[in-house]
Amino acid sequence: MKSPLSPEALQAVRQVPLFAGLENETLALLTEGALERRYRRGTLLFSKGEPADRFYVVLGGWVKLFRESPDGNECMVGLFTRGESFAEAAMFDRLGFPVNAAVAEDARLLLFPAEHFLTTLERNHGLALNMLANLSGMLRSLVRQLDQLTLQPTYQRLAAFIVSLCPDDVDEATVCLPCDKLLIAGRLGMKPESFSRAMARLRDVGVSCERNCVHIEDIAALRRFANTPEENLPAPLPSVAADASRCAALRPCR
Image 1 (cartoon, rainbow, N blue to C red):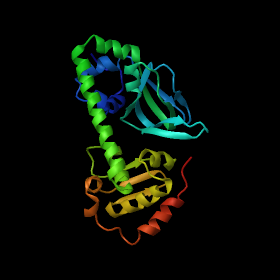
Image 2 (image 1 turned 180 degrees about the horizontal axis):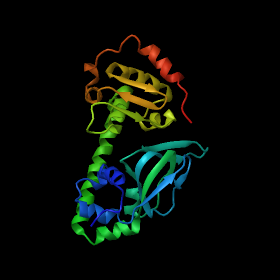
Image 3 (image 1 turned 180 degrees about the vertical axis):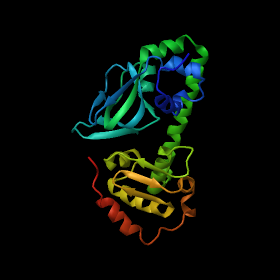
Image 4 (image 1 turned 90 degrees about the horizontal axis):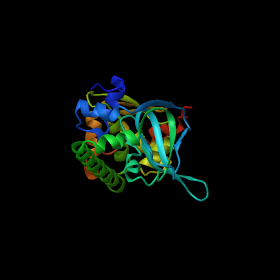
């Protein structure tokens, strides 16, 4: 059975931990009911308490999950981009969406209706077990992210985040971040002013930023930097303070 998705969309789906290791025929079954949609920045995808009758895979752009405080302020819960999925756990427990979701930057998404997806799992017990194993892997990944937030300095968190956006088969890359750097700061558990300092610190390992475009000269070096114990990291170059001021002064794109 051939997947109904385009080659580009299928490649993005294969990056999603939920679908890790699935055969082509199995993947085609699960994606048969998926719908590709484009959304403009600011579009509300769902609200807390709505029936969790779908989940999403990001093909491009950015999506944020958030809660609203009693005084109306947003508290960001998650930030997702290409090759990541969200809202699948809510689909399984059938208790409704626990948070709100909105498009942070213009996005292309795959919408998976829950009914088709769950029916496919019910008819294939082996596939259901595979999904459970993949969900367990996603939980372990969340634990690693929590470790990063509590044990790593801000610039290593940012380094790991940028590495996660890079293709696997290249030595250098240019990636696009959300124009609103507050989103990334929130995801990485840092203050907005810490973001510019952290980005400037990464210039020591060949990372440069201009507006929302980040160029990585050596992805392998950045990956090593992200995983090196803090006491073994090289001292920052004297120019970092000036670079931090420059990065902070860049206007976010709109």
